[in-house]
Image (tube, rainbow, N blue to C red; front, side):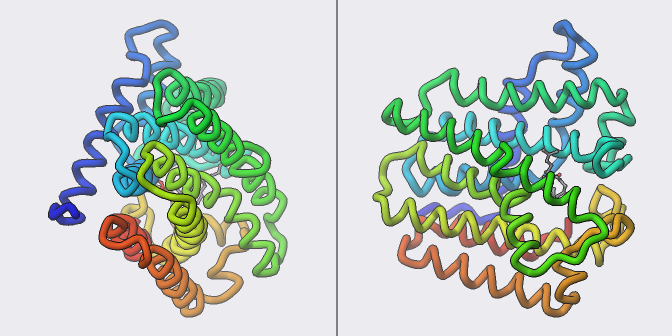
Length: 298
Ligand code: GRG
């Protein structure tokens, strides 16, 4: 078991993820320079890097090398960054602030923002297919398929489509959960599952357990996001607060109220932590990460 405390570990993964992302992104001096500059603007110097943290925590438990995990961490973060750039576009959420700075279409222009998203998504798949990342090629192929499914119409993009259709509507709790499990949850779940597959020390039961943990944390992340959107302020979040209510979007807070939404987050956290218990001390980072996700301020 590592003796490094959680804050130090988190800081070191965030730093190495930043370096790994800077290395895989094309230099801004390389043509087409404006696109490359905008890609680097969208990805570097911001964000909590929750998905890379999940990749590394699951991968460390599975005995994976940090070099493999860096690549997978880059891939999921590139997909996440692309989704934020497209989500902020005027045709979607139409937002001007992200990670405390102007959104990509504001800083550059809409066409560039569209291309940034396209190029980041392609780069993600390039990064996880260019080097061996698992002990068997069939496992790596499965990882590629998992990332594609998590990003596509049966995953994040599908969840976003449901989100856009839901504006102004009252959703049931089941419908809200379905939307979030896809929109936010699928990539978070994939981060855990891909990290675990970079190593080879886990049996099928442990892999299954981690998948359940990933699903719970994906939902948990969104419940907390809804609470923060309703409760926090723009300066703390680094993105526009109160957006869900302004856009008339159904959320856990509008459906359940703040107190019950908070209770739901705590009960999902308990469930996620209990899921890890049989995995022993090696799963402590994942336990700490779930707790961090619930108690984060932005
Ligand atoms: C455009 C295909 C497409 C999908 C967009 C994820 C998403 C789908 C939209 C983002 C909108 C949003 C605010 C969703 C709520 C949860 C979420 C993903 C928040 C942002 O993620 P964080 O908190 O952001 O991990 P940082 O900046 O820390 O990386």
